[in-house]
Length: 295
Image (cartoon, rainbow, N blue to C red):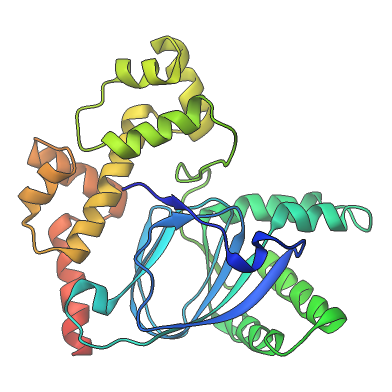
């Protein structure tokens, strides 16, 4: 499952460090993507399953999450599973060009602390409690604000997000699902190759060859960047794709395992449970049970 690089249109040709917008669609996008902007998302209407990095959770009206730069993510509406006939998807989104913001503020304040927050946010944040209510209220106000008032509201949101109360991290530290946007090189080239060929048997030797490194040097280099062995990374990519198939298809678990590159079903089940803390069957059952409750 290759995440696509996306450029939020409102920031594409501007020097704005942040943009807030209201998005109304018939359903949430099914495009698994990433972009260099951080993104705060409040679900005004709609429900389904969201994937942020390696976190896979149901969402519903009121959900509030913050996603760091270059982290693959997607929201699947209930209607995307084919089990619901109608679904209105409305959200408020705040996009932040963290690098530009820190550059603009660098002459006024010490930005090291906020830079560290943006780095940590690549784990994905879920915001709850009183903090969620406060941030949502500010977001709604920002839709009508401009100039200094808008900037003031934006800074209030950053202060709220930076404080640890009512915050849950969705992924472990040093998420391997973070992709750097950089000129063609060893790792971008390898990532592209993996996401094009993960269904096949990709040997360590082949991965090292694609990267232009000897095996021993490749292993050290890859783990230093991802905090994972190559085998662990490949499993994560395959299991991420399995989750999508469990959500969007009627394929059997055995068929899904084969489709994701696993010839050993027991090994597939062990890998899936290690990453998602539940078996493939339990994962699919939880989605079906939730859809039945909403029917």
